[in-house]
Structure formats: structure tokens, C-alpha cells
Image (cartoon, rainbow, N blue to C red; front, side, top):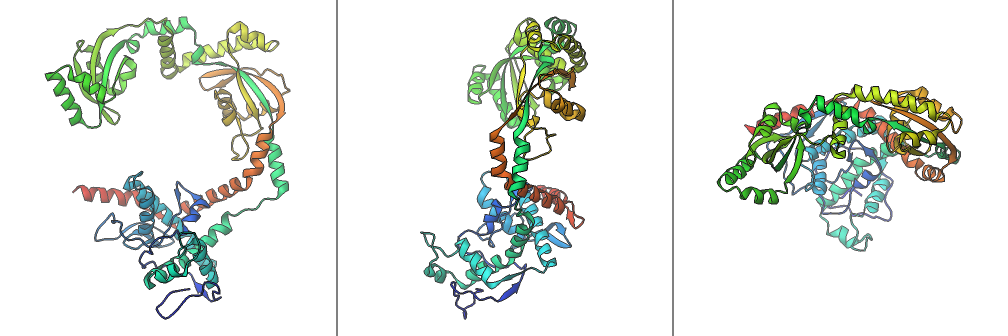
Length: 499
């Protein structure tokens, strides 16, 4: 089906002539119609889709008057140059995501897609894979390059395409079929019904749990207040109206206007969707000691800043002088507990261990009664299969434990995980550490989750195929054949453009 001026193509009776894979890509872009982008839905590699399309026109190249080699695979350069695979991949991504992603991200994704394409094309060559004329013809027909508006092959559309365009379509499909063949061979897995049923049984049979948590949220009020009285500065509170700007000059303009007309600050606050809220001293420590001290030492009504706060430049108007809050208020107590959990976790752990031991002494015989006596709420965990969380198809505590502490304890101690599934239903396990916290767990009932069984049977082939794809990805990017210089070359380009 290769087009020349002296050759007409019979789509209904393609010949069986075989052709060797050819990696040259110097053709012009055909007019429309989908390409091998359909394979993007079949193989999920890295963070991108494999969307190689026909050679592109009408899209400005990133770099002018040169080709840039970002790396290589098996000795073959991965380069960005007019008409190269990486150029065409970038063009495809740009047309699809140009309005959503910056050019640097698009370029990086185009690069890694090209590495995958090159690696699998070399694999096809090593295997001696040939594609027949009939395979090429059938793929062109299937992809609808010459379909009419009704989605049916139309000879008039075919005849209207120029020779160069038809040749470009033919050559691109021919060149990419070996790659597609390798992808299909490696990632297409067919599992037996018996295998699916076995895994479905594993996934659907599990047990429930519940546990009492001793963490920073139940740290006693008297201990929290005592800590705050001994360390008052972090909890000093001030009311501020804050405006965030994307640039320093923008923030300085707002400041200058407010100094000339104080009322303009409220207008800017509204337009910028700023905030007027109370802040603890520790919440502003990210500004740096000098800047946070400037805020807390400023006179009421004054404006301080702009200070760089992450990616924005912030102005702070002092709406009221700093005060020590009421440490017995719930919001303040919660803030104190969170602060202790981050900055003095040993205090939380010490209390949690003591409280969990006391609770367990009563809970071992009467779990529900101990909960009521301690004023605690039990955290329920839905049916969970005996899994360490490494399976992509069998659910684990990572997904069923919404509060997270039971998963934390089990994932850090395999013997504790084993005890969860080997202990008799109704057993109350001894206290166990979970990060800074401690938990006391009661084993629930053994149950069957039919939804999990149905999920496995429906998606098992997809998940196993995805795992094969992940293995393929890792093999490519960990291979000694892959030389990666993307970051180095990209930084050189940024530096050159800055000059």
C-alpha cells in the first residue's frame, strides 16, 4: 500500500509482500485522522501516553537552528530535531495538552516516550520482526485515515490525499507496527478462570477490626495547658489581614497605595481574595525569625512586608495587638496538641503508652465498657483480606483503615500484622505503637466481601497487564543501554536562553 504516482492501492485485496521495519521519519504530516495514539490506552508507561503521530507541521519548534541530543538508548540518539521521533511526539502532546501543561513538562514527557519507542523498536529488530503488507493495509483501514464523516472508508477521501501524504501515512504505520507487536507480546496476558477464582477468593475473605487510639488528639487538657504555659511564645495570637501577590513589585505597589490611602488596603484585600484571621506565632515561623518578629512587634494598624512566603509575596496588616489566647478553648487546645505532636512527639508517646496500658487492663475483659469509661470512640475497620499491602488487586489496611493508625502499626511490624489475622475473633490485642501513638485492637468477625470478589474477576486481567507494563517500564529505564542526559541538557538550554 506504499503510495507512488504509478501505483494505485487496492484496499480490499492487499498483497502479502513483507517489508522490514524502517525507522526513518522524514515525511510530511497527513491531513487528519487518528494514528497510533490508540495504543496510549493499551500501555501505561511512566506518567505519559504513547502517542506517536504522523510527522507534524504547523507547530513551532522549541529550538532553532540545531538538533539537541537529550540521551540515547542502545547507542541510538534521542534527539529533538525537526522531523525526529521526539519532535513528533512533542507536537502530538502539544496539540493535546498545550493549554494545560508547560513546554518543559511536555518536552520531558516527549523525551521519555521516545526512549520507550526506541527501546521497543530495537527489541523488534533484535527479534527479526517483520510486518506484512496486509498488516499495514489493515491498520491503515482500522485507524480510519481515509474515512468519511460517517466513519466509513471513502475512496474519494483517499484519492483526494496527495501522494506525499499517503506515503507519509503508509511509512509511519509501517515503522510503528513492529513496536506495537512487541508491546502486545510483552503486556498482553491471559489468565485462567481458575487463577482468577483463586485470587478472588483470597481478596473477598477477610475480617473486621476496631481499635482505640491514643494519640495527640486525646492528649490531656491539663498537660497541654501546662506545656503552653511553659512555652508561651509559639501560641501568642495576632489578628492579621493578609494579601498574597505573585510578584514582589505587585505587592510593593499595593503597599505604596495603602500608605497613601489606608482604605485602599481593604479594596485590595477583597480583590485579591485575601484573609482576615487570627494566627498563632508558630504558624508564621516559615517567614523566618526576623520577619515573624517584625509582624508581632508592629503597631496595630500598620502594614508589614512584603515577605516571601513559599511562592507568594505577602503583606500583613496588624488588625489587633498580639495576645495570649485562652488555653482552655477547644480550638486553642487542638492547636497546642498538634504543635506538641510535631515539636515534642516524645510527650505524646509517653502519655499514649501509659494510657493504652491502663485501657488494656480493663479492655481485655470488657472492651466496650473500657471505651465508655475512657470516653473514647472506637475506630472501625471494614472487611480486610490478609495482605501486607503489596498486592495491586487485593485490598489491605492501607485502604480499609480510614484513621490510619492500625495500618501504621501493621505495616511497620510484620508480627503484629500476622497476629491480626491469626488471633481468634473477639481477641483484644495488647497495646502496640503506631508512630507517636499507641493502639489497642479488638479482632472482629471473619466475613466475605462479594464486592471484592466481583472486582477481582472484572479487573484481574487489566491489573496483571498493568503490572507487566510497569515491569517493562522499569526494565527500559534501568537498562545499561539507556543514557539519560535530559536534565543536564535542559538546564544548558535554559542558561543559553537567559543569555
